[in-house]
Length: 448
Image (spheres, rainbow, N blue to C red):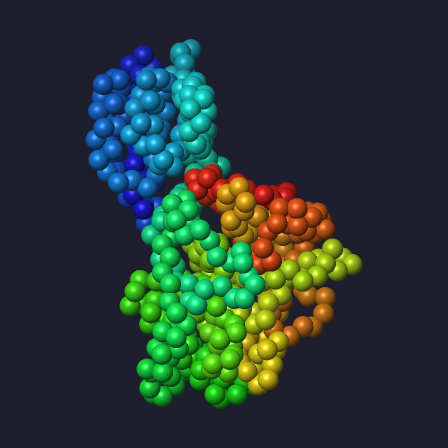
């Protein structure tokens, strides 16, 4: 990720102190993993020098921009900055006034400059974020990291290549997207493959290759009750998609997992979906493209798989039961619970395979990008995964939301969100709200 940084000052203020602060900020950003900082190494003091620095920086292809208000500075420079970087995510940085013993002057006037620039940007309807405080403030750097994580996710989406395998499943009309709008606003390119191509690829692997893959991919599984043929076909499907991802630079898959896999091959895809997600290749069930986008974002932040689920119940305690028919990655299993690979529990008829376990407890964020009638929006809710209230086959997670589950359900129903939800372990409301700002996506959510 390439980060552009400009520091601005003014002759009549203590630009020497402001420059020290700027250089501290620049150095600490440069120490962050995966970040390259470009731009001047010192603040600009004159209007001409600052505009020249902005012109030089505009040659760089930066993913985000930080404007450091080292002191109060020139109002005119912001017009040039927004003209040169009309859509680049912008973070403005202001400093507390240092205390200078025995000195009554106002050293920086940084907050005033920050305030002035914010008012300009608001008038121009130009999105921005800001942080304000001490240069070493832990709170300020935590806020800045939210910006960084959002921009990293935006970069990942902009470079992503999604593969839709077979299209959507029957009747799931909202799993597809307007590809041109999706590409322009959200970022990923969409590649399409017919199921016949994947099925043909499955046949190309030798029995030795399949066995070797099984030795590797099935290690996290404690109990296998699925038939040998079902397990072999699951491994072949997993290998086929893994090879396609590697050969064609595919970030993730949205797969039409029924009915052709059942009617033609006599298998289900859930086991393969679970193994792909375990391997870090995000794969969405039932051809759901916006679910895949959400999964890729959460993977960037959590560095682990998530649970793509249906919402199937609210119990007397107010806990929401999230369930799906066996596509959860094995590493999400509850502590001490065996991971089972079974014949598929809902398709039945001896077809396979599916994972069977309840998911681990812990803080979770529920999120789902959706293409609504007036544009993209993001459902965003927080809670905790708790011990389930009953035993169910396949995969389940009981969630105790921070807000009453029935109120969240009402919000889902009133806004027409689809019935798929991404449950990610961790707290990501701030990062997702920031990302949605830079994607131009409305956030619909409850209490954080």
